[in-house]
Every structure is written in C-alpha cells, then in structure tokens.
Length: 276
Length: 316
View (cartoon, one colour):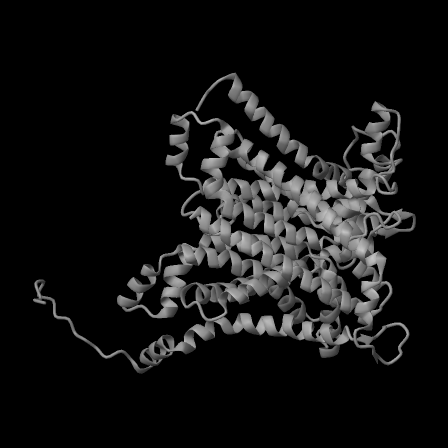
C-alpha cells in the first residue's frame, strides 16, 4: 500500500462520495428536528436550534407503537418463513435436481418481474373472496411468497458452492439427511442466509402497496400509516413525515451497519468462498 | 479389519423410528417433501391468482358500475392493442428502465472500483453504511420527501439554485424536467446496490491473477477487461438482471412524486395499470393488461437468463 498524500486525498474522495449519497437522508433527519416554520422558511434556514417536539408529537399519536410492532412482527416472521422454505427448496434444487428445476427457478424469477400493480388485482380479489384481507396470516404469508424467489436464487448459489462430499461424509458417518441439511450444509451457507434475510427484510419493511390494499386496520404497517397521516389541514405535514421517516430508518441502518460483511458475501451468490 | 485398539465395537440395530426416517429420506419422497412448501406457496399465491387474472381478462368487469361481468372474449386485448396511451406508457417504461439501469450500472461499477482497495479507509464501515442508506429507505417516505426537496418555493434545491443562478425550477411540475428529476431519485437510491454488486464481483477475482496483472503492468482498462470481467461477469450480470426487474416495476416512487404527471410524462406502464385498476376500477381491462405485462416479463427474463448462462459458462 502506498502511503502519504495521495492516499489521504483518496480517502477524502471516498468520504466525500459517501457524504454526497447521504446528504438527502441527512436533510430529512435535520427536518425532523425543525419546527414547521423553520422547515418552510423561504430563504432555507441552514442553522437552527433543534427541537424534539416532532418526536413527542409522533409518539403521542394513537397506535403509533402498534404500527411499529406490527411492522416488526410481520416483516420478521414473513422473511423467516420464506428463508426456511427457500433453503429446503434450494437444497432440493441443488442436490436432487428434479425434473423442471430450471423451469421452476425461471418461473419464480419471472413472477418477481411482474409489476406489483398487475399481481395486486387477482391477489386483492382472492383475498376478499377468501376472507383473508386484513388478517395477520394473510399478510405474513403473502410477504413470505414475495421474499421466496430472491431467497431461492441466492441460496441455491450458496448450496451449489458446498461440495456434495460434505453430504456424503455426513451420511457415511451415520448422520441423517436432516442432520446433513441443518448441521452440515446450513452453517456453511450462513452468509447467504443472512444476506437473503436482510434484503427481504428491508423490502418487506418498506413495502407499501400490498399492505395498503390487502391489509387493513389490524395489519397496518408504518409506510401505510405514514401515507394516511401525512395530510394535515394545510397540505402535507412535512415535519411529521420527516420524524416518522427518521425513526423508521433506524432499524435497517443498524442491520446494514452490523451485517455489512454478509451483504457483500451474499451478493456473490455463493460463487466465492470466504471473505470478500 | 483387525481391531488394533482393543475397543469392542457393538453393532446395534438402529431404533425403529431411525430406520423409518432413513427409509423415507432415501426414497424419492424426501426430495419431493423438500419442495412441497415452495410449491404450496407457488400454487396458492401465484398460480391461483394468475388463473383468476387470466379468466377475468376475458370479461368486462368493473367494480363501480356493479353490472354483472360480461364475456367479451378478446375484446379487452383488442382495446389495449388499439390504445395509444398504453403503447406510449410502454415506450416510456423501456426508456425509464434503460436510463436508470444504464446510469446505475456505470456509476455503480466506477464507484465500486474506486472503493475496492479502501480497506484502510478510516471509518470504512460508517462510510459504506452511509452509501447504502438510500437503498434501504422506504420508497413511500423518500418519494414523499423528495417532493419537498424539489418544491419550487420551499425546496432546498431551488433555494440553492436561486442563490447561484437566480432562477427557480418546478422540477416535478415541468414537463421538461419531471422524468429526469424522478429518474435521478431512482439513480440515487439504487446506484449503491450496483456498487455493492461490483464489490462482490471484485471479490470473486483471484488475488494471484491480479498480482500477475500488476507484475505485467497491464493498463487499467486491460486489467478490467481481461482479469476482472471474466470472473466478475456472472455476479455483475445477475445484479443488472435484478435491477432491471425492479426498475421495470418501479411504482410507488414515481406515483408518490408525480402520480404519472405532468401530463403523462412520467406515466410508466405500472402507473398506467394502477390508475386503470384502482382509480378506474376496470378489473377486466386491467387484468388483460396485467397478462400482457406478465408475458413481457417472462420474455425478458428468458432473454436475460440466456445471456446469464452464457456468461456463467464463459467465466467458469
């Protein structure tokens, strides 16, 4: 590694890029600490005395804690179900290669490509007809379905990366298939599991459309709450939007901060062993 | 084999439940059982709604009029075929996908290369988290908030513009600017994803080959083309594929910022469909359009996978 001025300039450049990407986020966070007048001041106010009033207002709204809890429960359980289901399928696709494996993998991916507005019509009609609208199960299982294609794709890559000899060794030494599945293969695909988990978690956490249409009062998650609350008497209540966004983005940011290396390994789709 | 250690091995018949488990595991049943959950999900949440949608697309069914559905055979499809609005929206969608994915890919790869050798960057984890933040924000909130940022009187961008140039631009209300302004937000949100993909792809390049290139003093573009690309191609292509898919479906971001306007300069096909289905409540017609979109999506995915398989064979 070269040392000296060039290196320092390089580091400053990298930090500069990071700050550029973060600026709009910072602007939202700053807005959460402004009063309404400061936020809409016409020569934009660059310096101000921060206030916590917006957060007080946020947490005194009815049900806000409910919505946050609903968000956490629905997204975590949906993704957890999806990961288990996808791992089993990925193992089957990778080891047994049943007829139509490629076709099924392909169909799963194409389903993901259909615009949400297209899938939402039949799903909406189906949910109304079966009485699944605004039920926890209906919401969770729907999001699980949404997370499955991507998870199967990531996990199949990772299981492919684990040599079948591990399975054989496990079997010869008296382990059962299930033992091989969960005690031999599973630990080796951990980066893939974590990456699939994070990506889908972020997706479900932020999802708006389906929660709006097939959810209801009992299963409202934060993005839908945001859109229903944001109109005050005089147009959009910007400080409220900023405060809620700020609170809402903390969990995913923490996840990305602490599991960063898994994100990188996960995005190799199992083609690389070890650290990236 | 002679027992050298002198330990007595007792061969014990496994218990009945272990034997049962083994026999199940080794029969064809086990591999099918692994697939059952995924198939259930697939059938209940994809196949049934799809058949439903396919059926509906042959009917004239509206949620507002309350008239009983009427069988119109291919009427809806013909109507879509003759609808210039749909064709325009489709063209705009391809423009949208092309612009956003191309810029995100190029920018992402460049930034990825820049961040590649930065393991000694002070606070690298913080810096990367800051870069990745845009893609983990809810489009529902960024879409909403960017309306304020672009706002002509209160928005921060116009505040800076008016100081520097003395003009104010209504980015989201001006036909000339709206498409670019919305695309810029998408690029801001998703360039980090391509950066992440690039970092992962670079991790797939063996160190030895890079050192060899270093020793041979290959210029950077040759290094990229002959050393990095063959190994990283597969991951990069998969990243571009995922990005194309998501870009094709972008909906909440655009809808929250412009609702497809001004005029219909930002009306992609997803928005057009949404308007027809949930503002016009014409379920039959919308289902027909959804079927067409599904077929388009399948066609695209298969072309992509074909290319992807080529790059996998080339790279391995």
